[in-house]
Length: 287
Image (cartoon, rainbow, N blue to C red):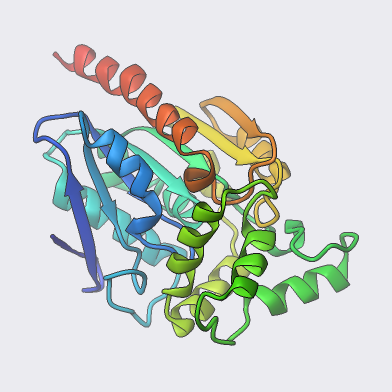
């Protein structure tokens, strides 16, 4: 289906699973698409209603000149309103920029109405470029400058070659990632249009959503890989300290930035746990 955002941007939305089942909403990260959540959709759709959407400009959602955290929040609100009944609540899981989408929307009316709990995977709220360890140098101006040049590059990624897989694995995945996982992520990331990737890199560079974290009053779990170079564990710890209702912080040894792909069973399990604990509680209290 298609959801229409506040500025008219059209968003590709997929709904999987049985009607009436507990709802889960999945928001993917920068340069990805709904395909990134393939493992979660496959496992959860047996007994959940799984809603996944392409961020504007990604996947099958057309590009839009508006690239901002406000636009991300507008888009998530549009998806929630289009797919959930009045008063119906879901567990919202966001990976990387998808987690930032959740933070941006935390104070919005539709988000508060429709969100029972949140899972934040491999994400951060500010200082992303300075904290990144993609460039193996000491923290400082040189590392920040080089990281900004790499992440904000206008260069086309080209075809998925063995060299491209090695580069993507180094920057975004753990050293033990299986070849099929690396290949899947490479195909998804290389499928993102160059202009879209570049435009959103500026938003990530200037990101400051610390206020959004403090406004996220629903139960929230945080997952991060110890080998994450893009949003290292220090980012996850900062989120836990700032969240009003952090329900757990999980560090995955040897896992990189692509946690839903690298550790699919664990991420799926966390979502199931949040659904069981919080959506059922909400239903009983409102009965």
